[in-house]
Length: 119
Length: 113
Image (cartoon, rainbow over all chains, first blue to last red; front, side, top):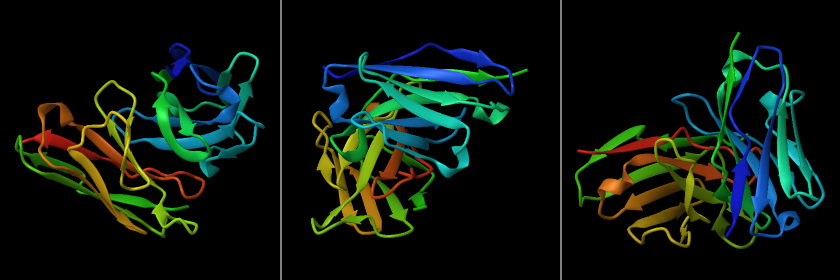
């Protein structure tokens, strides 16, 4: 069965960077894309960006351009999301999700990774 | 960017009654010549990741109960729960996947009256 397993919770200081991993199993990794979504405490879902696991093409949310980088490692079927210059309003649960074979809705989700930014 | 606006923000419905959530996009999300709208609905329960319920505006995801249905086309969409069950208490989100960024609505919190 399709599974996305994310790395554990992180606590970072303002200005630092965080890199969240998302290990996929149960399907051909390079046949699908990965979307990253975050959710601040008590808030809604915020689309962060998408990466093709086939060729590494990316699309990022405008507000995160320059601070976020999404990558994949096809040898380990793992996707990564790095966010730099962290601020307190980056405190959120970060989710990875698989898209449905070329269409950008998300049919399987990781369990989420809590990232807390605090001095 | 396409802005997705849901209504209402919260909703309380009695068990067994119908629940209706609306979603409006700031521009059409009709996909090519297929006449399908690039609109998905997700359900999120506390402490859990979202779960896909509906895609292409009206196609129920495998495993989603048949009391959930989606309708609409172009810019106006509706998620209907035909007979509310206790386990349907959640926040529901619509999302357009017509173009990047694939924006979400603000969410609708559904509770039992």
